[in-house]
Amino acid sequence: MAERKIAWKRIILSLSVLGVIICLLIYMCSAKGDLLCKEIDVKINNSEVAKLITADGIRKMIEQSKVAGKGKPLNDEVIMKTAKLVTSQSSVKNATVYQTGDSVMHVEIEQRIPVLRIMTASGSCYLDDIGIAFPVSARYSYDVPLVTGKIRLPAFGKTLNDPVFATNLLAFAGFVAKVPFWNAQIQQIDIDENRNVEFVVCSDSHLVRFGQLHGYEKKLNNLLTFYKKVNPYYRSANEARYTVLDLRFNRQIVAVKSN
Image (cartoon, rainbow, N blue to C red; front, side):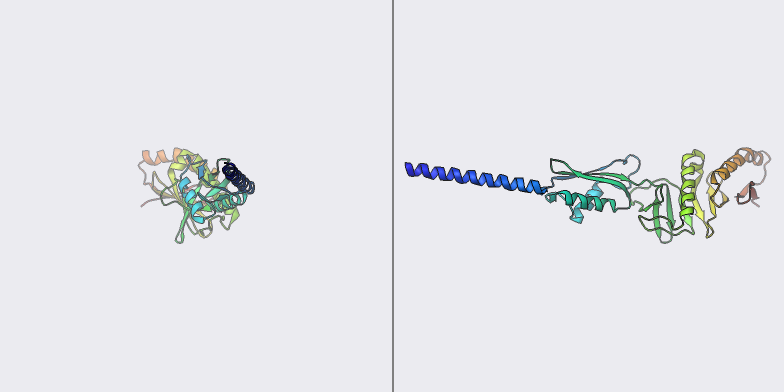
């Protein structure tokens, strides 16, 4: 009987020691931050504005990079690497990555919102409000003015090589987007080698030779006045319609009639 008691005591002691060792290992792993990731939770904070990137797409990118994923270590180093990976995507404007006590990695993203789209023979891209280029989406199209002509496509994550022109172009596109009349009428902006701008007014299908972009707001206001005051004359007098409106001259609009 005494030997059996001793044997049971040894077993209980061994189990207790084993339990202590397991607890120590769990504590040591936790102290090092070597928890295992249970889930990657991705949220696009401004997804109601545009859907150029998706939570599933970001999650798959993270997992395929092998930086993080379900069952993989979750610590400060992994969080930092994941944040660097996500913010390296040119479509991402800002990103916050953090972990919670339930071993979940959270990724909160603000995507870039297009102001205009550039299309050239070499490709296409969007520009956001500060001129950063990022890819168009094959599954989602955002309705912004299209810029074509003699313009060089910037690399993703970069801006146009002419900062002054880029500033004027973005301001022009922003103004067009804010005014319902112009937003409906100006769909494509063509640029020549001297940075002169032309566009077609959708309702009448005539060409506007706009010229340089400086003073764009005054030029557009003058053009709108022309449409309100002069257009009725052409219609009432049954005059031949113009095919071109030229705004390149100081404080005047030259109308070229069709034959």
